[in-house]
Length: 119
Picture (spheres, rainbow, N blue to C red):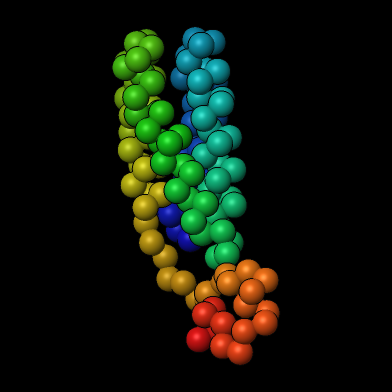
């Protein structure tokens, strides 16, 4: 859970960074698109049943990592911030947490004597 909360904080930072560091409009738009995506998937992954949603942040982190070099972000602060935030998002997306219960089986499990998620 700590990794998801940290990803939420990073996503919020990505959203406010253009205003704080006065990035140009193109870079600001980039940050304003990726930030909410990271926050959304991190919030969804807070619930144990949705913990695999954390993997949806990997493409967002990869995009933050690659985009500065594709679009030649200026100033260098924008590049380094995107690279560092992207790396942190990717690493935190793979962080495991203790699983308290198992969910699944679908409708089929209702009609089984010993469904897999109850064992």
